[in-house]
Image 1 (cartoon, rainbow over the protein chains, first blue to last red):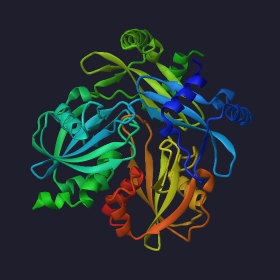
Image 2: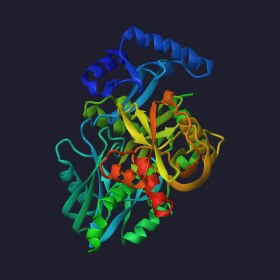
Image 3: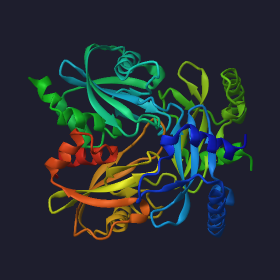
Length: 233
Length: 228
């Protein structure tokens, strides 16, 4: 099967990824003749900018064990043609998990090295979900793997659009009260587990020492749901 | 130039993207012979899982005018080897910019069509940084382009990494007091701009009507800095 035919089959298999809502968005074109016209138009445009014409090719333009990059043919809101890329994770239907771990009224923060940024970050546990587990089960398992934690209660904090590792179905956020925790998992790049009171944690967000988006989003939801006030009582 | 040669040249040009700090436990391998050994080992593993051996190839494995995908050979803490992929913006090491705009005490949000989600989201304005411009200049440009607004006061809110698991790039955040908004940039999939009192904005975060992570982070920083 050619890359292009594979793309059309993928579109048939995942119609929700190719939804065309009413006006104002970017309409995906799946008609083969129209796609060819858009590719020719884009190839000319790219060549004029000194870029390879092959960057106009519609289809599954990259694939590995984690996901695919799709290049779709689209009509922009004013009707003009173009192409648009997006990453689609293989784990369709499996959101990631992000957990704000609390121990005796304090927040646990990991010092963790990430390959993608080649830096250490101060962050809360996060990772991929699993098709075999519920979000809560995945959260408990992740806490055990990352910081040897035994989780007492878990409070769902809702969802984020984007999940760790570009998880297609976003992430489920949780607030966890831990019964115990241990060492950070060195294999996961975790070199330290910090136990901070709320003012220290907030200062680190304010002063840019915490710059992980998942951590700050989970904190905000817990704050707006009044969970820190309950802890303090 | 072969894919590997191109990759090694890229590594020499951007050493910060290939740093191997002590204790990191995830060392990038740049020695050609070692890379070849890692590729062989990983390709055997992939084949055993029914995947193409080509997915073990180290290099810049995808590249277009916006983004590149880099596959590195790495050594883990226990000595085992693997390959890891990461997204790097085509404008290498130029941070994106997003701005929390406040007009007459109310937060301004745009309704933006997100191609990857095939749905509209309530977001704050922003986008890629243009090389050669400072983040402040990029913030002014983005606000002018997306909502036709001039900035009265611009305050940095620090940076955020939207996905430390897959992307090398950070975003610089700003708080902006703006003048009267003008025309919105419909061509970029923006259909509407609304201004909301802070309480309503918070309520919409709580009820998950606002799910844009960048908006949540900018709001949190602005709140903790006493700007709202």
